Image (cartoon, rainbow, N blue to C red; front, side):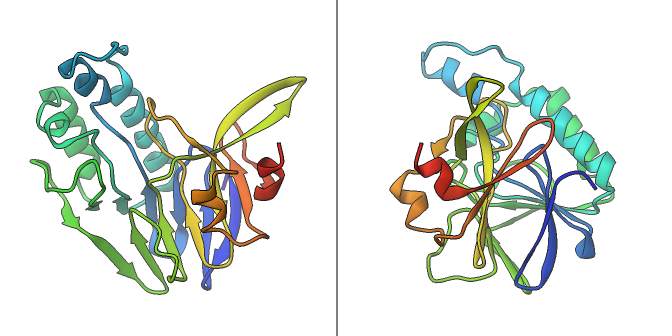
Length: 224
């Protein structure tokens, strides 16, 4: 399977180029920080507009990941919607699209700081999901091991073909994985930010997303 294969707490996982995490033994796909409806939320608040296509683009990529993996369990790891009103305001066609993706699958919405309450869509809504030996939650708990989280939208800047580019990145060490934001209109936090260096071990890796994954020491990005 495309992506970077690694082990956390004895579980064999794959960080996919798309930013999704796949756990083959559970046939489970995990994505974080979709921020669906961000363009709608910005328009509602009078902020500079964004092209209103991000939900369709994000769902297209998610549908592709589900087709490629055949996952029967999906965990959306918090901040799936840019806010609760954005979830309620999704066009009917996009709500139907989500319902079709959910059909025949176990679908879990983990609560995030942008979407703390349940939304009017199918699936199960949880604060976090223990699935031994792993635990899925939105924001990392420094005292936890075997943890899968999101929230920070980690990214790394690197030189590629003579150009400096920034890519979303998985951060991985022996205790945890922090997923990149999966949504189309999501910014990111550089891997040298103290919020991330304080969570990750010195030997942590950054797995950059894109057409193919690139694996680098996280601290390499912190030195740039």
